[in-house]
Length: 146
Image 1 (cartoon, one colour):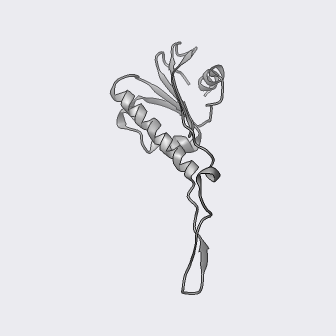
Image 2 (image 1 turned 135 degrees about the horizontal axis):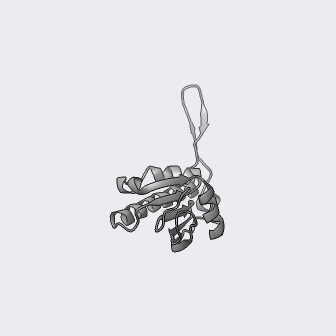
Image 3 (image 1 turned 90 degrees about the horizontal axis):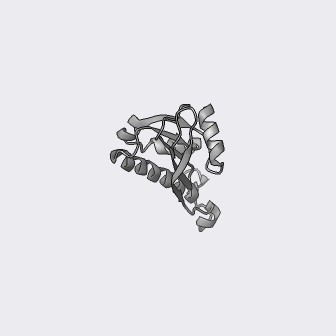
């Protein structure tokens, strides 16, 4: 994938956001970090207080376990929505002309729900991978090869 000069590249997952700007050219990207945001989101077992409840029906004496809320996933989804809101804000301020988003499939799907039309106009590519823990040189290579 070509990464035009001065493009924004967002590498995110449910807990970490890295905003890069391409200081290089389309063929040889040189990503520099502009912003880094990390959220503390402990595992669900540390956020939950109790086991899921049970319900029973008087008709037929049926019992059923209630589905437990996954607080960890709720936090990751909220973080993805915040990332989309930040992209919107920066797009409306004309801070970037083209954008590439790299995120795990679930995070990418959650972000898509919140894309503003200005973000969609500038979006030139999405890569469904988790690269937040990779060095910048690997991120540059993987984007170029995609």
